[in-house]
Amino acid sequence: MSSIDDEILRGAEEDAKEVAFIQNYMGTENRELFTEEDIYYCLDVLFEYLDKLNDKADADGFIDIDTEEIAKHIQKKAKKEGMGPYELDALILLIDAELEYNEQLPE
Image (tube, rainbow, N blue to C red; front, side, top):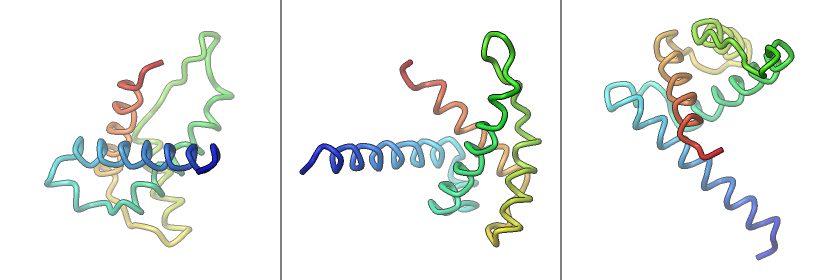
């Protein structure tokens, strides 16, 4: 396998670990609220949103993250794109799970 194929495979494995972490974080009672496709979609929208926030970072590079605001953004975009519907509280939990996952990653 070429190095590009290896890189793609590693990326897919990391994505699968991330989704599994989020599903476990959300617990069995909330796991049914999102399919894997839903999680990937919500993460894509979340990352797009956070990229736009990078322009608003303070001098130390910190960004003020309002999970409810982000969840509302995901709801709005999902509705436009025919995804969901997603409950606000469930989206906040998903965002919290993603933030926790990133906190645990080595720097």
